[in-house]
Image (cartoon, rainbow, N blue to C red; front, side, top):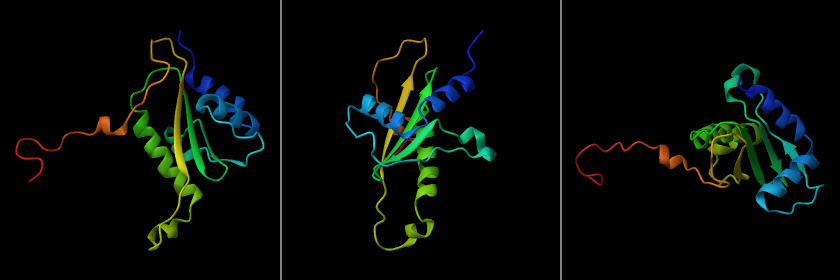
Length: 146
């Protein structure tokens, strides 16, 4: 019998739902040293209409860094695509939608994507997954540069 993934995810989310716990966790996994009283705003997607688009934990740290953390018990090589969808929706939540149409550059918090894996299948302690690995080569035959 396999473990209930939704249950595991909700435990992870509850465990790290307070600012000090999130800051401590982020410091541990990113080798950073933000003070525990660093301003932190939860930005986790919890849209009940689109439950398949929920993420585990997202937060704005010090107003400059958007951290998205996912807790996975199975390997998912589509995490870069999922993170792209999540970060787009989070930016929609935290910025003025009209500002993207203005001439002046809109400064946005830098994203940091972290996936914590605790499954049984072997996987490296650290790895980098790239969205570009999912791109299809749209140039079939002929010159790519034409």
